[in-house]
Image 1 (tube, rainbow, N blue to C red):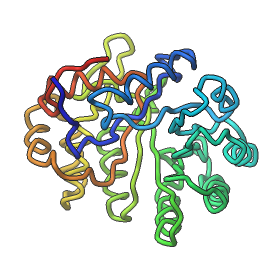
Image 2: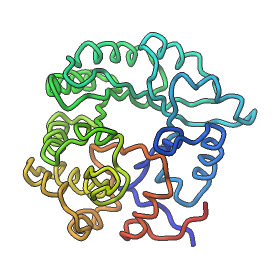
Image 3: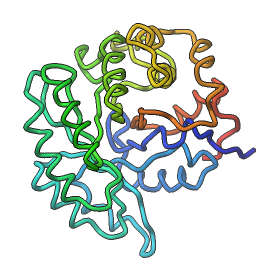
Image 4: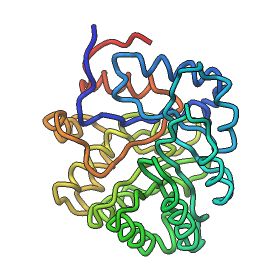
Length: 286
């Protein structure tokens, strides 16, 4: 059975196979990404994400006439990152660059300024994502990003929603405030880490409560329709998928507002959850 992914879910999941916890070898990740791009659910899948320092390894894994879309995760200083992007093999289509601009408690504005300079010089990028800690200086940094975007710079925000420490998991209200702040600034955002299942859940191994990507989708739709922080936060706390489906199932034919998507080390896991929820109909052939 073959079916297309609804417009609301287009490009929702970037392929982060080489990053933890999956940590696939790059040749295996490239081969799997080819399969995803050829599968019936290809519209769900964004670019292959990879560290900037590993870009030189990629050409040797590509066919002579092959073109591969990738998203580059900065693990180099901005000046070296700029050079790595500029010198990439022409078969590598770098769609986006993502970089953390500060650690928790640091002023994010110097890092934002450096990333904006790179974004001004880079050509052919769909977006540059500034990963901002949800602490000191956040709203001021969002103002700077929104102003740059209004001036034509392809810049957007990125936030961490999980990790190896409890403080890396924002509370529902913290995440709701960020979603609404981006809504108020007409600023797209991307999320990273922790979004392993569709619905909010407790990980029994770590004891951490993870945000669900179906929760985030419903919450973002509510924010885009004018919902305040309380409404958005309530949707982020939901453990029953039914209220989430009420928010999303009637909007499947529309474009997804604000939320660009998230990276996952598995494509089939979120796909399976979406099928179980009835947001995608079909069986997969990977």
